Amino acid sequence: MTLLALNQSNLSDICLIASDIDGTLTHNGKFSSNFISTLLNLQSAEIRVLLVTGRSAGWVSALVNYLPVAGAIAENGGLFLHPNGQQDLLSSIPNIARHRILLENTFHHIKQLSPNLHPSTDNQFRITDWTFDVDNLSTDDLEKIAWQCQQIGWSFTYSNVQCHIKPLNQDKATGLDKVLKSHFPELNSRQVLTIGDSPNDEAMFDPEKFPISVGVANVRHYQNKMLHLPKYITQASEFAGFSELAKLLLKK
Image (cartoon, rainbow, N blue to C red; front, side):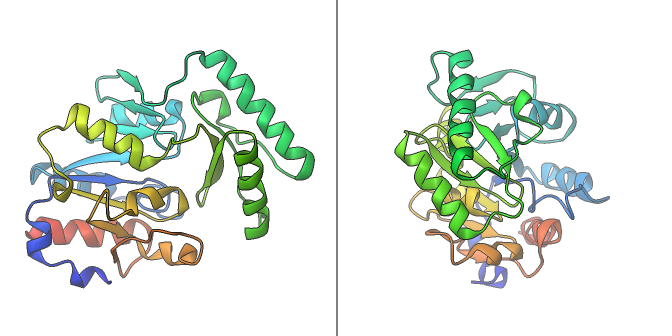
């Protein structure tokens, strides 16, 4: 459904937006001039924004420090970063150093069948997952890599930016559910709106977990590759689509 179907009765209870970053809050890979003013307007209306991203803990800790947000979930559900700098590990990882070695070894195992893979430059800032560039990978390539990860006990997802090798059961929805229960216990599922644009946001589009979900228009690029699609889709792509949603919320 288009965003026009998201009427005021659906919006009246929304207190928190759980938002992806890349392709949702960005325009051509960058934050636009009215990005922070939109966040401030939502904050003034007592609508909190929680970032939920596949980006690394290192990158996201900087964003949380500077942006007017309620916190951030990084690495597709791996960690929660508080605005005060505190970090909560959301995945069960007894030994981080060994975990990093296993992730890197898994990447090199996958690369034996896909030799053109290139590790992302931000792996040095990651804790729970390992990433490599998604550029030039076909649907068949992605399906083969997902199968390889599954065979050796890892899960896999990808976005418009990166591919992620990650622990089983680590995803945005699972991490978001943990954070909501621990840090926003006063909210129920109909007070939370999820928004994103790509397959690593798919778990947040599951209507049994989050009944009010929105995709910015560029999510249509992946509509044949996802089990769960957002309930509503904006007219505009990327941050313009998020801005479209924000204007509706600010009218409620």
